Image (tube, rainbow, N blue to C red; front, side):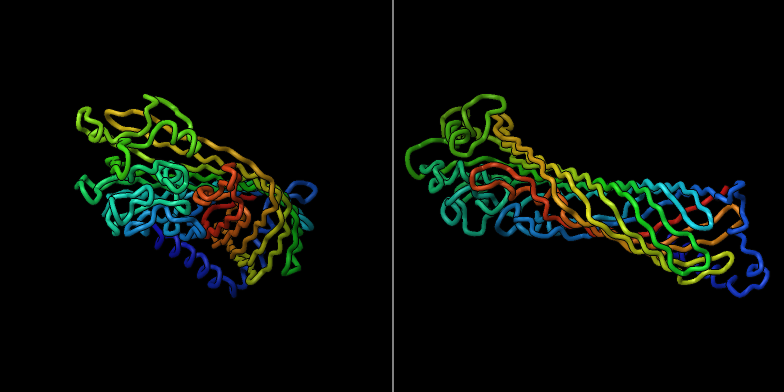
Length: 415
């Protein structure tokens, strides 16, 4: 599909150069002599297929976990493929000005990552003792911070045991499994006024633009919960510790905490535990943009333009962080919390591109091009994990940047 797109765009350019020296076309400006109403106004309708990707690196996201499997679960390495989208443009123009309304949906970018860890996961200071030194771990710099706080005796958590997901130093449990995702979508609405001087190689414009950026990201890890006693026997993370120390809410099941029942003399079966965190963000950007278009090549049938646009925007950003720690099997206790916050910030949206057009008939034109979009000052879903202040209050992180690029190919009809 990618080769087909670039071949089509190359063919369009070759056709334009091929006809550029034909005198018959030079004497008959096909596109300019098309249908117009009594006052010289022409109307255009354009439909385009978009093929875009987003920048493959999300920066400044903390580790999901520390240890030998940290790189496998890193959101910094999330890689979006090319996705299909569409753009629709309606316009009206005379010999002086052009107005246009644009709507674009760049498609839904999706990244998924699933598998099995190579080692267990320590929740607290048990790494190197109850869990071997080569195991994975969580702390106050990673995901799952509330769970670490509940388990770490030095932070007010359970001091008489070491907690985590097996296997550990004593028990050869199956390794934990994980499931990870990152989704992103961009929608674009514009209303622009531009100059339309056929005798000038430069056109200038101003426009209103609304950009909507919605994202979701999350990670879940499921494994065998183990609590190794180093003091008084407790058998797990208590309800009081999870709610009072870690600040979690009891959401369902039995309010008895998270237990390793193999140590309590019940049925001898340890609990299966799923720990998950997910984050959603919305960005509603509204502002004005300046537009400059330069004609690089122009004949009666073919044109090649370079376009640059940019502006400052008001961004109403909203983020939601959802923490869930769920017992699976004998213990169905669910603990977690949900936090939501919004903020208004100044963002920047800019872009550049090359656009071509080739007149097939006096009323129909083939259009294509390549574009880049840069957005700064937005809330990205993976960045929300480290947005809890020292007081435990969540604040949406709006320091993210987006770089998207790709091609467009379509038809424009003039009437």
